[in-house]
Image (cartoon, rainbow, N blue to C red; front, side, top):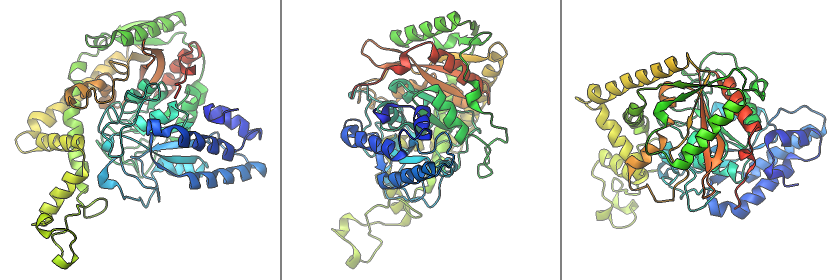
Length: 503
């Protein structure tokens, strides 16, 4: 039995029945990583020794007859933007290449209490800025379905490692589609919860009003199980909502009767790949056959979402990334001209720093990648004197209009179904030199973040080239249960989630 292929709930049954050990499960995954990850580059840091120690601890508990939770002893990967105590956290950036956090994110604390096995930290676009995981200081991540294509981004490593069976589950973060888009392109399940449903404490900030930790899993049942573990109020996070967390597995019913599925006409536009559109229309027909009621809804301000997002997100990033100055922690330029000549290495005339401001500039120039610098400059400009009201304030007003559109639409339906991405995974290097085309990859996912809503990506088809296509199901605030029920019904009546890449 190839343990790495199984889901978390299948492995939990084996653990409880003592038919497999956590050590065996974890070892099988590391063996696969060591054999095949060179082709994918889905990890930045691996924590094999710590993981195997934890696995042995879980096995001892089981042998003593102690109860374990549904994810105890299950190997999980963590996006490298989530703080892990004593484990390097780089955010995919050179500027944090040597940063070892002294604290755990709340989600990591929850995992440790449940004896979850942390495999390592996954590759990502630097500071979660990108749609392809090509903007990593640690090399491009590749799609397991076709290694010449991107896995999506910014959580490409977290999606790719689940698709490739390098992890049973993983965590990512979603600011404008960074969970759903790579989930779609890698053929796995990716959930972005409602803003405030999962604690953001310990999530290194990109755009604080948009960022949300979420999940990657092999199926919907695992998604519900993992959400149960990470959801809930956290006093350490001021944006965390005080709201009871239901048992999400209770929503896993194969039943679409009386579910009203909204189809927004604005999401079926020119520029969407014909194969993607066909897969989504076929999915809508599937819901019809299963007894769902299909209703047309309108989200009229959708066309302004990308423009609003690329003012709001860079503006918040400009503020959040100001802390990386080479003084407090992380990378500092090797230019050491402020020291006495006797302590300098190399030619002093080439390494001269004229002032502390000069040191800040050189550190940030050398430490940040091109996309991060681009967004810092965009954000700083939008917030500058004379432009704040013209750009940032106007973008916030558009954000309110987009949220109002969803509120009106949800008066007519229970969930909204759309594409996740306009295209299947594209070739590595195809859009990296055209930022505007890259930004449009998130055109169907960005509105959800602006409105703070929950949404999921599930496999719904394949292109002629064999690349996965994802279906996005959007829900009302804190109605993850309805999303999971709808997604579970679709999954139980289709076979897309059963197909796996051949690496």
